[in-house]
Amino acid sequence: MRYVTLVLVITLTGLTNCTNEGKKKDTETTLLFTIYQESNVYRRSIYGEAPQFAIWLENKETGEIRSVFVTYRTATGDFEGKTACPVSLPVWIGAFRKETGRTDFPVPRNPAPDAITGATPKKRKIEVHTTINSGSDWYYYIEMNVSGDYTPEFSLLQDDWTMDDQGNGQPSIIYKGEISGISGQQSTPILIGRSEQIYFSSAINQDLNGIKNAKDVFSEITVKAK
Image (cartoon, rainbow, N blue to C red; front, top):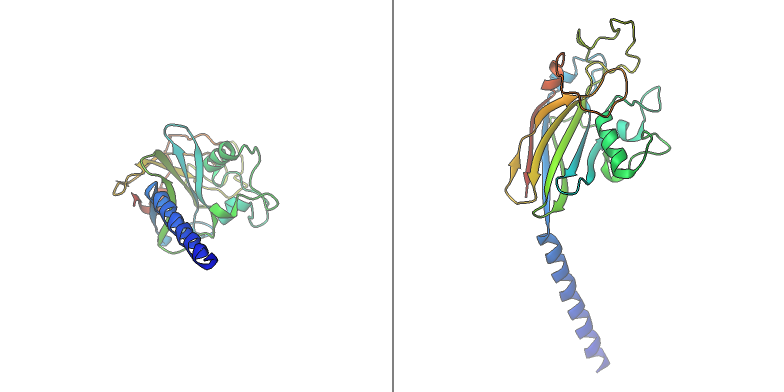
């Protein structure tokens, strides 16, 4: 009789777990970010390296910030010859500070969480996914920066003799879009501005004068809810 009772308990527990998992799946929607990057564009920079980039969300109702992905060097501050590069993805850093309450930059001894960090992708098609509550409404942002992609407007030496000692070139550019947790929705972001070349600022500058081939690094961006 004890044996029968034990079997019944295990069976009922299994049914409960399956039910809970089904409810959890019903309340979450997956967002798939698909980005196509052009190596023939970023390889024309001084360093020829694939771009640093970050993706994050902002809840329309609550203002909650959620970092989704950031490339390894910016996430850890592990740049060659320096422990941080504040002009790499400064707008994301500002969002990350709001999200976490930190006031510093990610550095090797205090990096961003591994859960959002990834190696700098070199393949043409990049896919990143995350989950949100079904039916919730979000803004999403994508910030991208290629080092050493100088233009006359963003040169190594400024008119006032200030040197771009971070090797930044054209500053990071920022895309923005909107998406809801409704399966089947699809969104394409628009380019809304840039950061600053020489100094750290998390504000988005809408003046895109002088931003040239940086706009062509990401040739296509789509976000789908599934």
